[in-house]
Image (cartoon, rainbow, N blue to C red; front, side):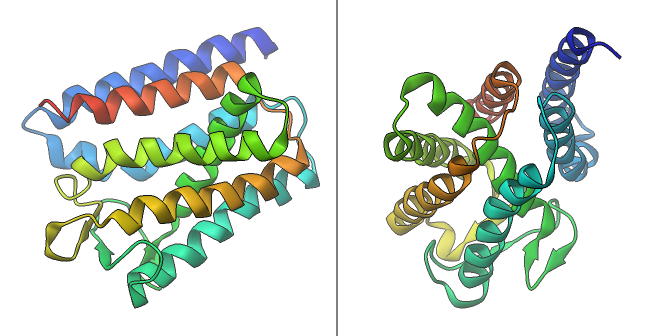
Length: 209
């Protein structure tokens, strides 16, 4: 399979699943589409991996940084109300460990990969890039939080998202980026941009529908 074909086919699938998901959730079969959320998150990771310039142990280590940081911080949040506030996960993100869906940790990794690539377009300094990456992740969370309870992803106590959630996202994402970006992983930046736009379009759509 040629590199160009993988790239074009990946973009096609990204938008196929994204648009299908939007219309599916707006349809009478919304619950079935929401239950497919873990598959969609895993596919984003697959697109990143298959289009990466080089896969090695360093790539795995880089992946584990946001994955494990995500798990630890989410575990503290779900079980002790630390960092993000008091909340709990619903059923549509799949299998949980200690109250934390494994796929939410994959989500942390995916968001770190794609926002790291975007930040590299903007600045060369790793500290500034890490802040930009963390800021982009926090901005995505702003859009996602609106639909999370509706989709049975997660819900905060008293149905109110505290300010500390967004501060926590910015700080923890910055730290994850600072560690992750030191590995200088060679992923496909255009794929990352497409995934970022697709996720943004998906959740912004449900701000209005």
